[in-house]
Every structure is written in structure tokens, then in C-alpha cells.
Amino acid sequence: MSTAKLLLLNGSPRKKGTSYSFSRTIKKLVEDAGSIAEIIHLIDYFDGKAKFDTLKDSLLKSDVIALVSPLYSDTLPYFNIWMLEKLVSECKDDLKGKNFFAVGQCGFPDITRIEPLLDAGRFFAEDMGMKWLGGLAYGGGAMINGTLLEDLGERGKRITSGFEMAVQNILRGERISPKSQETITLKIPRTLYWPLIVYLNTKIKKLAKENGNVDYGRKVYLE
Image (cartoon, rainbow, N blue to C red):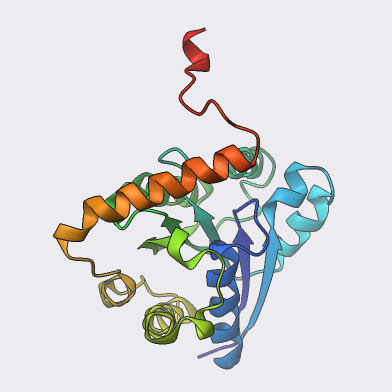
């Protein structure tokens, strides 16, 4: 297996959230396999804190590019969409032939909710002439809440094992094996789905209130 350089794009506005935790583990697994990995926070480029040219330079020097992102309103966060559109506009020929994969995570255990996010990654890769290596979906990211996987006990070990299988495929330029997805998928009895959803909704509303959004039921688009 030849040495490869992998660039992980953290698509979360939180630099120490679950997407970063996943990126950090994937980075370590890549480095343990003898290759090179780097994590970049996309929010910096959207806010203008970092120059786009530095990101472009990192992309051009990478063999594999990954987008690791939370699910916002059933798709990618806006600044991720903005960045992908910018890359299509300014780097289309430059990234042709590079390998690309995505990892999506959401608060709810139902990973079918993440399909639009992974489809967006696949469409982007195909439009850019890149090789799509597939994607992984994790439902239950809110329960991790940025905790490092090595501190999550057996659950963290299981997720890490799934990522390790995926990294082996990725570094060989192969499509991610379905076994990786099966390994990381959170197994929750159907009878616990509704209590969990109620808990997560309550937690989200509390977080919204703490950040000043006291009227989260307001339908601004109808006003």
C-alpha cells in the first residue's frame, strides 16, 4: 500500500464537535497505516478567517479528500454547500481524478436521514470528475457530543473499528465496504425510538433557548 495524503474537511461549525471527533480518529487511523492526514475546518474559510488559496493548495496536494459533516435541516450545513459550489466554479479541472468520500452524522438514530447528505457528496464528486469511494452515516451523533472515541468505551471502539475498515479500503482506492457501515451503526430497539426522539427534541429546544432563540416555533418564512 503506497503512502497517500488525505485531507479531512470538518464540515461542522463546531471545531470540537462530533464531526471533529470522527475526523480526528480517521486521521489517526490513516497515520497508523503509514500515510498522511490533515484536518481543516471549513467554517474558517466561510468566515474569511483563512484564505481560500491556502485551502486550494491543500486540496491540490492531497490524494484523497473527505467531507465529515453534521446533518442540518436534512442536508449539508449552508457553508459546506457554499464551499462545494465554489470548488466546482474555481477548481473543477484541478481536482479531477482525486478520490473523495464523505461521513455524515445526525442526532437521530435513523441513518436514512443522512442519505441526502451523502448523495450531495456523490453528486459533487461525479461533477468534479473525482472518484467516489462511498460514504458512512452515523445516527446518534448528538449523544456523542464531541467526546473523543477513545473515551466512549465499547461504543467508541466499535465506531473506530468501522472507520478502520473504511480507511483500509480508502487507502487502496477502493469503495468503502458495507461492513464498515454495519459496524458503526447504532443498534437501538424500535421501542426506544420515541423516548429517545423526545429526549433529543427537548435537548435541542433547550440549546436553542440558551442561545437566545426563545420562539423556536415561529414560522418566519410565513411572515
